Length: 115
Image (tube, rainbow, N blue to C red; front, top):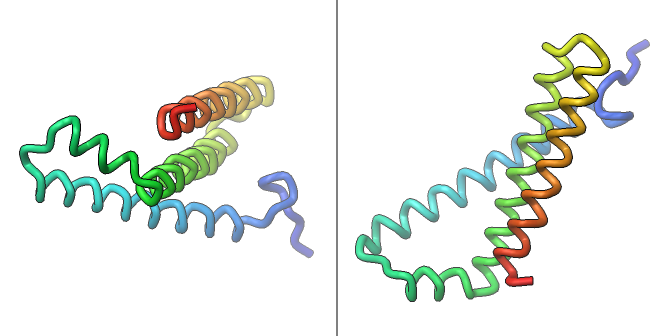
């Protein structure tokens, strides 16, 4: 019988799937951004602002922001459970990472949507 010991009851498959989907979203966002900059070498603030004022780009950026948070959380959680054996150290590390990710995500949403 196999027991679930990771992710507070979720299977490793769920973490694996989130990692892969978030990686695809981040790759697509990076490719789009690099392509935009290559196709517009003299991009100025007005063009950049026009790009990011569009709802579709805001949604795409929000997906990338949330994907970055999920990807980082799963990766750092895996690393901390593998290498930080002392419970208190691992717990403190995971709480710090969780708090920072929450702060950065809220900050990113505020920047993106102008809240």
